[in-house]
Image (cartoon, rainbow, N blue to C red; front, side, top):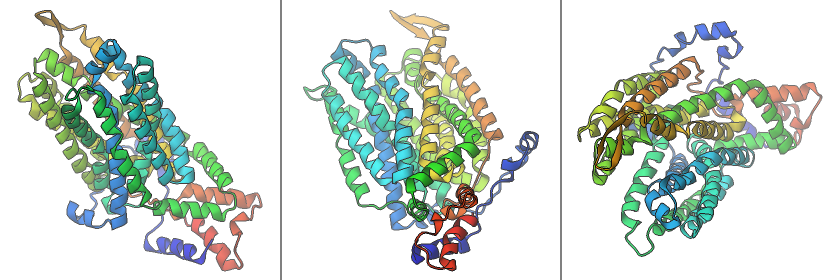
Length: 512
């Protein structure tokens, strides 16, 4: 390892205290449970106003955030192209709407495959090239969907698209947040997460302009969806790897075999953090139930139960997504002051209180309820990217963040089916020949249970607010070094010619 790199690591240790392993990791189960309420007390960290926090980011850090945000936004755009063209696709392939929605289900099912493949690749080989491959797949598969002539071709394209879509979230979060100044993490996390709502708004707007406005029907929306990833790829090619990854990669190379070191890190992570990984999947299942449960059947409720026109449904959805984008940013910023768990619990309680107007106001005034309910739902979501990053093992951040998110999404993928099936047990008077159901009651009950679940999971879970992402603060890496020393491995000292240089690498990981 070079003198320059050792100096850089020593400087990073001198600038800030090492991240201390939370005592909760050594607690007994009973002691851990007893401290959940006490550790929920808001730390009331002093945080500058948002504009000063944004000014903390360097130009390169802004570029990392922007490319991650754009990638995540277009990921969402590509996903919603199907849900916004269900009727046109059904007519094209001679299928029922329910059969076309299998295309959505397949995406959700294969996301976890993508998050596993691309997550491991991103943690081993870097954030840059897996991100680029992801976007190349977006281009190919969106074009492929646009040229599909049979139902089987359509399903095959969407299944493969699920793999590509699943691989992007963890990478986008790592790219945007790894090098972000600690004080600005909460705000940037909230802004990043709302790329999903932004992607929906873009998809809705372009669907209005491109679907059924040419002789090609629904196809132009998919053809257009393949174009912006070209620009995103060029953007990412102009940027290097994140500093955090470069630092970790340099330490791996200093140990000899990079692959063997990576595998050792994996074994340590699974041995020490398997319970945490299960917890994160359960937490993300609750969060995905929260978003799907409040959103998927909502347009149907507005149209079927409250007789909203297509335009009124669209306007309500846009207002709700504006609330989502606002909430994610505000609560993400607030979590830097009050803590991640407290912020999630607080806004979930507010969201629970707003369920009734969100589902039982039958006039256009429901738009206000939709704005504030999605403010709460996506406000809680705004904390998630940085919360997952801070909880994840340093060597496998991309994999853990992406896979826990996608497995939670898979578990919650039946949300709309559950709600619609239960809704059929509460029929309303028919409107002509149209059957109507009390979907509002079902969504209200369902969301009440989901909010309670999320509150309980956030209460009992850990929190690593302010955790440092540098390798010098990685406890797992220190354990690996100690294990190798105990086994008599000296490859950490390769390329060193004196005791001080040898101590530079070992001292780095011991400091963690």
